[in-house]
Amino acid sequence: MSSRTAPRLYAPLPLSPGAALALPPGPARHAQVLRLQPGDALTLFNGEGGEWSATVTRMGRSDVEVQLGAHVEVDRELPLAVTLAVGMPANERMDWLVEKATELGVAAVQPLVCERSVLRLAGERADKKVAHWQGVAIAASEQSGRTRVPAVAPVRTLREWIAEVAATPASKVVLSLQDAIPLGGALKAGTPPALVFLSGPEGGLAPAEEQAARDAGFSPVSLGPRVLRAETAPLAALVQVGAVATAPVR
Image (cartoon, rainbow, N blue to C red; front, side, top):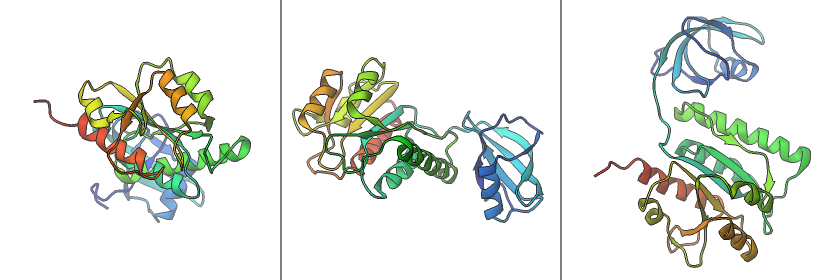
């Protein structure tokens, strides 16, 4: 198997050239599903930057051992750390949002329960969903070539989260239909080192929720003349942010 086609696995372990190690249960199962054999090549990354060449040395019934090769200094991340804070869409749409946002370079996802939310999670059910979405982010990072895995934060109510994020140094914007400026224009006015993008669930944010966001320092922005679905709007924003952040300086 050539390095070009070697599968990529996320292994949250200390990695060093020449080390021999056993893969954690998650990537070990992945390697077994792929039917890798001793001598096969793979690529590992631990989320700390870059990636590692590796070779399978042993395939057990429930364990996989590998030998690490060289570390490759590669960076496929956006130069701007973007957090998507979203009123969780219902059904499987949140899975799709997390997967695609990861592919597009999001740094973190904050699931929110809002006044108009259809999907309402709390307690153990919320914890299980977050763990599932984190797994979706890991798989999407492996597939897309990312060297870092976006964090999926615990589910919060919108008002709880706004109270905490108000003091963060990141630029903060909220998707709005009133008195909003285009997101692209807001970014071109001065690209920040980090950005928090807030959008609502199906039906959008309630007026009082949007006002609370504005009072906490969120600037109202628009994505254009059309109304986008709850799972589409954050991705459209991420595409615009990525285009601005990676555009050559003139």
